[in-house]
Every structure is written in C-alpha cells, then in structure tokens.
Length: 411
Ligand code: SF4
Image 1 (cartoon, protein in one colour):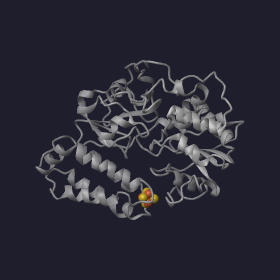
Image 2 (cartoon, protein in one colour):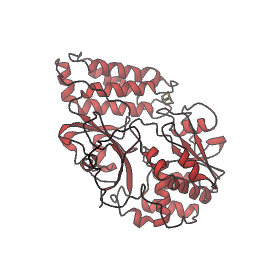
Image 3 (cartoon, rainbow, N blue to C red):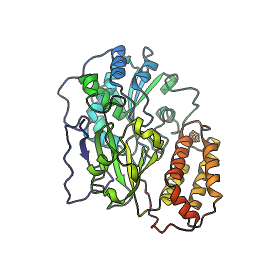
Image 4 (cartoon, rainbow, N blue to C red):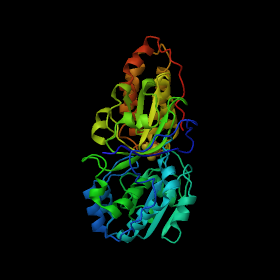
C-alpha cells in the first residue's frame, strides 16, 4: 500500500520556508495531472453497482455509502448538488481540490447529471473556497456554480438546500430528508466535492483500481488537512492525499511534525475526537479510529502541542461551536453555551470538582435532541476531551497545569 500520494500547501497554513516538502511515495490521484482517459457514459444502475463494488463512501464527514445515496434518488430526475462549503475551520481540502483539480469535481457532477437524468446540476462553494477555477472548468457543461455564505453548519445538507433556495443557511426539519424534498421541492442528491472527484476517477478506472489503495473495509484514498496548534510544531502544514489506513504518524511525519512534542491529535475536526500521543500509530480508517470515538470525517488532522493546555484549547473550540448554531433548537440555545462555560471554568487551575459531572450531564442532555447533528458532534468532542485528558483534568482540580495555555485558533 502506498501511503502519501500528494502534499501541497493550503491557503492560510504557513509553511517552513527553507525545508523541502517531502516527496510523495506514489502518483497523486486527485491532485495530480488531468486524467487522459475520457469520462465514460454510464447508467444510474451502473453507477450504483460501481460505487458499491468500490466501497466508495462520502468524503465530507459523515462517511455515508455513496451507492445508498445514489439509490435514494435514482429514477426521480433529482437535483444534484456538489458540496464545497467547507464549514470546518480546520479543513482546507475542498479549497485545494477546487484550486488544483476543479475538472474532476465538474466531471463527477456531469457524470451524475447524465446518469440520473438530473433536472439541475449545482456546485455550491463556501466563502473559503475560490469559485473561479470551478466556473472555468464548468464552462460548456450543465453545472451551475453558486458561491454561498458560510458558517459551520452551512454545509449540512438541509441548510445547503435552504440557502440554494434563497433562504438562510439553517438546517430544516430532519424528518423530511433532502432526497425526498430538497432544492425547489425536488428530490436532491448532495455529495461532497471530494466524493465527486473520487467518482470521476472511479468511473474512468474501475473498482479494482480504486481498491488498490486503502484497506478492504475502507478502500481508496482521501484528502487530509494537516495543521498544528503552534507555528513551529510542524514544518509543512497543508493538504495531503493518503490511502485510507495510513498511520496517523505517517501523516504527521509527512508534514514535518515534531511528534515528540505532540500531546494529542484532533482527528475529524471540531466534531471529531482526540487521539492521544501514545496512539500515533493508529491507522486512519473507520475501524481503527472507532475506539477513540473518531472517524476519518472530512480528513482533519490537527496536532496539539504539549506546551498548550488541552482544556483551554477544548474550551475555545466549544465556545466556537456554541456560536455557530442556528439558535433554533433548545440544545443549541441553552446546552452548547452552557457546555462552553463549564469547560472554560474547568480550564482554570483549581477548578471545582463538581464541574466534571455537570459537563457530562449537559453533554448527555444535548445529545440526540437537535434538528441537525451539531449538538451531537459538539457533545462528542467534549466527551473525547474529558476522556483523553482525564489526568490533566485531575491536575486542574488539584490546582495544577503549568503549561502556557495557547490558543487553538480556527485556521
Ligand atoms: S440543532 Fe442547532 S445547529 Fe442544528 S438546526 Fe438546531 S439550532 Fe441549528
């Protein structure tokens, strides 16, 4: 298995000026040169069979099997939407993909548009993703590129549909999924930009080729955005293309991370979970990340410096998440700000021991109660923080924690 296929700088992530970027160990699939094989014409049934045989799953976060999503709209002339909203602050992979290989995303949309007999084909870009290259690539195709407003939940399927229909970027009733009623009231298929690019290559090269990378249970490659909590923790933050199952350590080392200085790594983004420094050899796939409560998600890998207080860093993330809700459901209006308050108090040395059970109580209270998964994802992050950094919590309760509490700034 080849591990690292591409390593490129990402906008907003500083890179060491004099240190050469490590050479990839194989040709890039997604960020390399244009494919010379023409895009084939395939039917909806063929696409479903192909994605099923390849085991392609969504690369936007939830990791839903693509074949099941295709089946849900096949034969219904759906609206097809490419999702490049990239609301996760620690992710730059959609921005890099659309800057370097917009033709693959447009190919994926064109393929679906033809196979499904789509009534419309749209590509939605968030404020951090330049729409220009996609517009250029979409010239002469049916793909309409729409640059939309952002926010953490703006890429959630129903929020995206609502914004495309001229409304606010706010999730709607989860009982009416977008595959039943989406853009303009029509059945709608939403796929992440990277999933579309993967689909464009899969249609050209086939399922066996797709499975040459990755693991049998989690095949293919994916884009990872690697960053760190301090400027000198790694020399080459940016976006990497790696095979599923590549070890976390390999990814960190490919970016020049000083792994001896890493306290833990946030995998999957602000709705993800921490992997402690003792487990850096964990393979980045669904099976091996599950015991940590993490998934590959949208490919975020963020290393936390030992010099940073993990509770202060987590409190900043919790405060950010509390500020990103659509403020229309109880768990978000009351629960998330309360969780952030409690974590901030816990981050102070000499914290009240009663704070820990109270955070756990609020965390359980918000789970499963929102119109979208924002409270659940936020609660998952907080649960992982309390588990991973339990000894550090004890230090705080005893009045300890002498690390400089550095910021985990949204990047
Ligand atoms: S759960 Fe929160 S983010 Fe989701 S729709 Fe309700 S208020 Fe908005």
